Length: 266
Image (cartoon, rainbow, N blue to C red; front, side):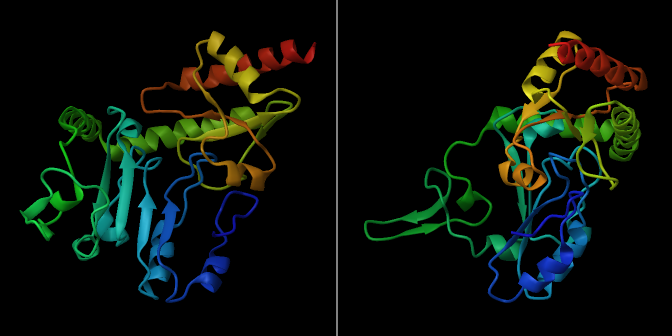
């Protein structure tokens, strides 16, 4: 595991010390789904490739917030989930370099993946079919395709720029509030801000925000090791999106102040 600094950035020097030919794969997220920290994916890939170590990029949090060019990154694998692109749940995308996919053995077996079946032996067809056993999720694929087309029509650069502006504004407003602590430090963030509030459980804060029509997520965000490193077991996560307005962002701080004032009375 690559060590993490207090501000949410990875310790690249520690990664360099760990890398050698014995490493099987490096898996790294492009943007933290907890702090929103933008990670130096291209630098990590370059360092891993010096030892011919493949790199898998988790682009789930990043895919909607800017362009992910697999050729420029030179990543071996890249994956993201459909619902993070405004698409349906239950489907995602896995990109892989052909030379990497060619040597991969099937994990699941089913229709559409075999070439020749005999009594004693079975041979599998070419990629990607031999890695896609059974009936594909056609409705999910169609929905995902439409979602990606929708985002492209708006413009990935335009989405990234607007969400960055909203994120920076939100971080500033929350940092000004008493009892509120923003995770991640003063580093580049994109479309995620997580906070903790002194003396108030994240679930309680999320419930009260919901009453004001402000949708957030509370919990560990499937990242318990990271939260333990930061000293928390649960946080509140805000995820500004391209459809949000500056006015909606501005009101969050005021609403939180009212909730804190009310709960602190008890």
